Image 1 (cartoon, rainbow, N blue to C red):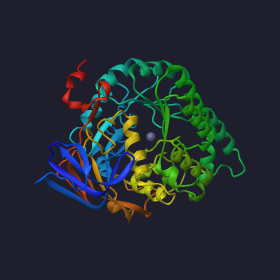
Image 2: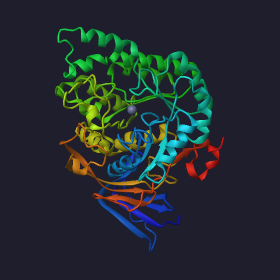
Image 3: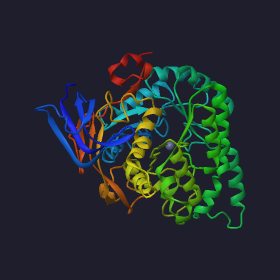
Image 4: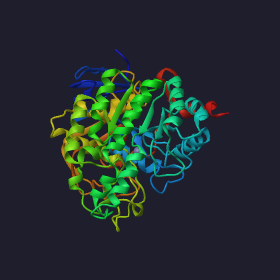
Amino acid sequence: MPSSDFVVRGQRVVTPGSVQAASIYVHRGRVVAVRPFDDVPQGCKVVEAGESVVLPGLVDSHVHVNEPGRTRWEGFKTATRAAARGGTTTIVDMPLNSVPPTTTLEGFRQKLGAARGQCRVDVAFWGGVVPGNLQQLAPLHAAGVVGFKCFLIPSGVEEFPPVTENELRPSMFELARLGVPLIVHAELPGPVEHALAACCAGETGGDPRCYETFLRSRPREAEDEAVALMIGLCRETGARAHIVHHSSADALPLLREAKREGLPLSAETCPHYLAFAAEGIADGATEFKCCPPVRERENQERLWEALREGTISMVVSDHSPCPPEMKRRQEGDFLKAWGGISSLQFRLAVVWTEARRRGFALEDLARWLAHEPARLAGLDLRKGSIAPGRDADLVFFDPEAAFVVAPEINEHRHKLTPYDGQTLSGVVEATYLRGEKIYERGHFSERPTGRLLKRGDEGKISDVFDDVESFED
Ligand SMILES: [Zn+2]
């Protein structure tokens, strides 16, 4: 019998592929065994989950923390509190919106310096591919980023410019050589420029307060053509590619075909594309603005179908907040407002609220919100499932309870979110990080104990600061 410091047991423990009554043996912060419910070593301390569901700590591979440089927008302290309260025990930070961006070794060094000591959950990092930084990719990889992100259309911040197909190609050959994924904001500028010109000349005069105007300015073709481009580059270079925040259902046949062909290509979508529909967005409600946009109800149901069949493999937040004034809520101008939705804390509840009424199960949540994002970021040997060898990251979850989203419970730096006032199903009661309780019913542990994770050889995950030599030039 493996030795354990304590056992967590419950009637509904979500392990890969099943929900069962089980005892989870925890030793030195790791799961060392999952045994039958009654199989508890004599004298061993037991934490009873009772009727609560025990989920693996969730992994969110798409979070814009914005620190350093735009800490007024969000920051490691607030973002990781929100994560812990929402049942997310690992986030992967995006390389942009922070200043400097994580596109150079120096940028990564500054990011780590900013994050250190502030995090309540574990944090890993994406690097960025921008024009001219090909030589930085190998050093950034050696320093521990889990992969790289690029944009095919302007990102909204000038220090993180998009790449053209010809700029991207050599970077993808390099990433294939390094064996790390490329994650892509897949919209092409051509269709957007064209649509914007057309809709501003249209009959409505392109009223910028009207959601319809914004929706028409970011047409599905922009995504569809970008996905086609990425499939071609994926086939040509052999690099592992992943489409972030996928919204256009019209590109799903392409993704299905790529999967059938066996290409190393995957896709994610976000809670807002699954929970909201364009038809329900009021004029001037700029808190709903994101790129690509929330589309029509018909589109939304096809995204759910894609999740059901696995064409879309995960749901991540794309938490991308800003100071409320940048949302220009007073004017309600969709074209000028910052594009980004604040939702890190609410991902689990939003997805569960929508998923349960479509007949999905708790295992689906664990796969979409924990296991698959961990796998994308190469963290799955340590994160994303309740199984021997993984970190004892656990969430006690009441799937039958409900709560109302309100500023008092919102841990993000800014409280503006399109979910405000909504009643959501599923309450996180407690969150454990590496065997330690970091959150319970509105209360947090005294100190932040999150680690900054580095991806090493053969999927080995370690703390960045265990190996500072990699930062010496
Ligand atoms: Zn994003």
